[in-house]
Amino acid sequence: MRRFFLLIISIWKQQFKIYLMAALIGALIGIFLLAPSYDYINSREHHASPLSSLEYVFIQIKEIWTGKINQNNLLVFYAEIGAMLGLLSLGFYKLVHGRLTRLESLKSELDKDLPSIIRQGEGPLLEFKSSLRWDMQEQRINRNLEAVVMKTMAGFLNSHIGGTLLIGVSDDGELVGLEKDYQTLKKTNQDGFEQTLMTAISTNLGADLCSNVHILFHVIDQKDVCRVIISPALRPVFFSQGNTPKFFVRTGGGTRDLNIQEALEYVAGRWKNLKMN
Image (spheres, helix red, strand yellow):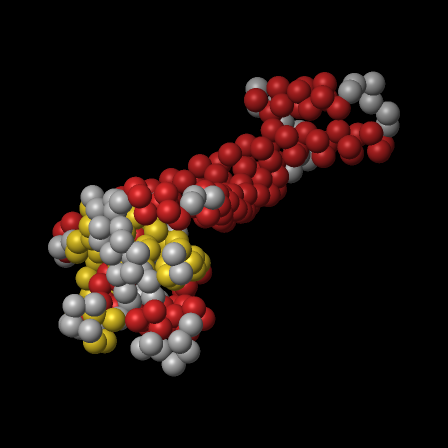
């Protein structure tokens, strides 16, 4: 428990340093740029200044730096405005940068040809599953297979870069297809399969994670294959097995659950800016 709280405090400290730096940079911009700019505009309104705007700003910056500050100068006000702008800019950057990174990753994945992906074989970023719920060996519905798919998806969601899951392909890369899975659904087609998979994600991993999952269908040799492209999650993802929440990560070409200590250390490194409630 003590280690847990130390890790939380470490995350908070890192967050505080980042926001403090953004506020300080914004405050300096307010003092050394916004304030002189306002003074220049004000001086031009009252009397024509022979100096150019840049010359005026540099003179003001020099006076501020040497401590020769006009008593009527609103430096504190501009420092506060600058700090707020710095914090807003940081928040906007994090939002835009995160979305652009996910879009670039998704575009890169979509550009890949499916047969060439299968030829690569399973690895840290790619895994094959023969089916979602139909047991090929026992020739019956096996709900445990769905749990295995959820475990794999949790591992990809918890990774730094996500991954791709192909359903309808055996471990050795043989095309199996989704026809047997279709027969277990109310809607025996691609739409029914997608709805079932997204419902399982929402129920077992979290509804907010559905936006991290992109589903495509390919037909190769008259067999359907579901291609699930998974983007990294913005929070730790747990999957419950036997009413026990477990934390899964990708290791090599497989997925394994971490013990409590390993999970805490992984979360601290993976989500450094995570807000702990």
